[in-house]
Image (cartoon, rainbow over all chains, first blue to last red; front, top):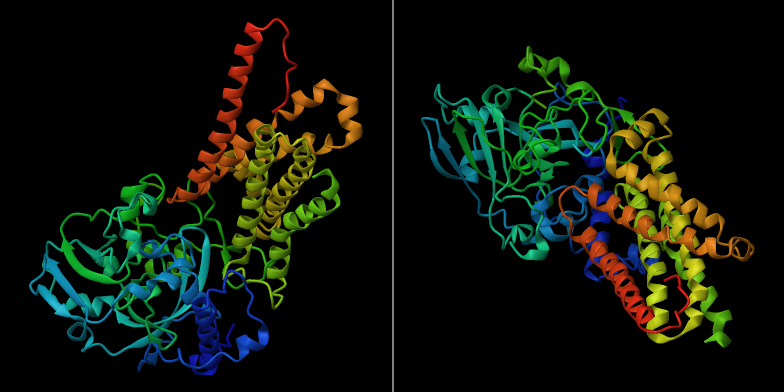
Length: 323
Length: 213
């Protein structure tokens, strides 16, 4: 589909929706759905501009021509267990996260290490928008207009040495800001915190690997992994770490959170692969968020449709074994 | 309570229809209906599945409630709860077959064979069919004592249903755990009562008639 919706064209609508949702939630009426339409429409405009707009250029080369999901879908349907296990939990609970000020520690096998403010990290990088396909391991998908810059550009600044075979990304650990990390009996998800993900260095340096700071032309909302997250469009979503506080170059393959939790279900590579099923469901097809109730499933593409760009990274590998 | 039957039965009927109304209204995006969120298919699956489980457990609550309160009229509600439990289980399956799997029978058969939690859920649904079919007064009369034996299937069905839910959650087992605990209480209560009755019958010369609980 060639008709891309430009963010500028739909900002008003979606912020209207966001405001409305916020108002409904604040009044505690979301569950009851008791707010009459007239009242909803008359919602005050106070919650606007919670996130600032960004300056960026569109990168058409790395953007899909698929129609992006709505802002409400992208920011209201998230897996971010640090804020709860329901898809609506992160949007409801991520207000406790403080993405400013924010520091990121660079460690491990690199010449330049230390702790940097996010401003220092981002300063040299011009921002671009890439419309990426996103495929969750749970067999649903979205199309998301991210704003960010190539991960490789950031990593190169720290001059990884020859022993840097892998890169590890660690998410913030702070139960006060991330209530899902609280060790209370009733909040147990069984995952070990902080959330850790990792990539082989050549994967991390691949031009498709994207360091994300915004979505839909705006600063990244908390529930999407503010202030800094990666997105790897050819891998299942859980590979893309959110709210990153540490980047470590390692010689050995990092242990990633979901693979630790259920090694038979989640691997290190987690490349989108329609031929290798999850033990409990098929990965051959996916349900695309935003398609109609009776729209049916879409076929899942090898490497989520990015095979031309990334397949060579895995030539000779048994992708059944390295799932 | 008998006098108010014309009130509480229709009320219960309407209450049982609420989840269905929410799902239908949500899919049609009717203005006063709470949104089903970004993934309405999954939400509707959940609404129907939860409703089936809730009603199954409610059905199992009727006998203990009657025995505790001595109110025999409660039994009149059990059939409606049971038939609604079956209806929601069927709607849950229909949502899985249609909107979720888009009638891809290959994928569905593969799921049924390869994915244990789906096998469990489907077995529970199949076992519910004879119970629903024999839920009429005429069938009750026709089957007599065999009706009671047949309808004891509700115990394995409830266990299968809860197990099905437990196995399909990814990590957070809090909600399925609630169902497990409730089911354990309801079944445990029956076991204890049975043991007590056995103890009584072995003591007294006149055995009390066995009773479906």
